[in-house]
Structure formats: C-alpha cells, structure tokens
Image 1 (cartoon, helix red, strand yellow):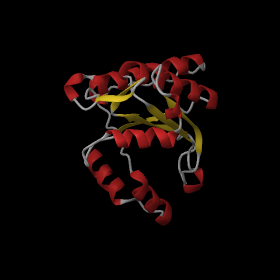
Image 2 (image 1 turned 120 degrees about the vertical axis):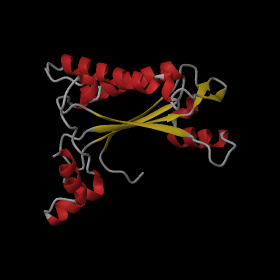
Image 3 (image 1 turned 90 degrees about the vertical axis):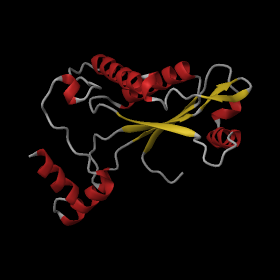
Length: 195
C-alpha cells in the first residue's frame, strides 16, 4: 500500500471464478486460508521489464495479453501491477516494469483447488515457455509500435554470442554509487571478472 509509482493494477481471474476475488484483499486472504501448512507457498512472482520504446497504452496492452495467457494456460488468479521508474532516487527513466503475482492453486467457480506444480519443476519446460512467450509478445508489440528493436529470451551463449552479460548491481550497490560517486564492490568484482 505504500509503494509509489504504481501506474496500473489489475486482477485477472479464470472464466467463471467468484467475482468477489477481484478485490485484492479478499483474493490474497482466501489464497492464504486455503493453505494448511505453515511453510506453504501461496504465490509465485514474475517480474517483467517493458521495452522503453512502448508508451503507457502499449505497455498495458502487452501486460493484459501476457496475464490473460497465464490465466488461460494455468487456470490461476493473477494480480499484476505496472510500476513507473523511481527517477527521484536515480533510477533509469526507462525502467517501466511489472510485478505479476500468481496463486499457486487453480481457481474454479467453487474456489481454489489443487496446486499447480508445473511452474516449480525445471523439467516441465514451463519457465522456458513463458520466457519465450514473453519475448514473442514484446516483439509483436514493438512491431505494432513501429520499432525495429527486438527482444530475445535466450542467453548470449544460446544465441551464439561471445558477449559477457551486464551485471545487475541491485539497490544497495546503486545507492552506494549514487551517494559516494565511487564504484561499488559489486561493480569492481564484475569488471575484474569480465576482464
């Protein structure tokens, strides 16, 4: 509730689901009540980054397409929020991203039922499926926006490239660099490794 920069939020449910679950509080309370073990996993999260070439309307269309396909494939509840970049804290102004929170149980007209395990198992291929599907959605929306930029879900190695991926510094290292004007230990270690 204290998060700033939330540009859009929506709950996506399978067809025929109880409509009271469109309320975020009721949805997640019911998800938690369905679990009996104290160490149960109640949700999974995808975090996606939007191509900077897309505007607000195009980002929303892209998110809705992705969430609808997740709901259709797994029959689960999806709670998604688009976040605008926190430019006041020095974040890149192109950093529009979304958090997609998903129930771990299927949702039917009677409520939450059995667990969906396919997203927990590497051998199921579901994570790779969603990475590829997201890249396809990105590229389709980039094409509709008239952009020639493209997204590839594969690693540099799988693409046959010798490039070294960039290092994600994270909030602590980024804050340190902003505050001091010096490179963080993480950046120094990465540059040492890359050379």
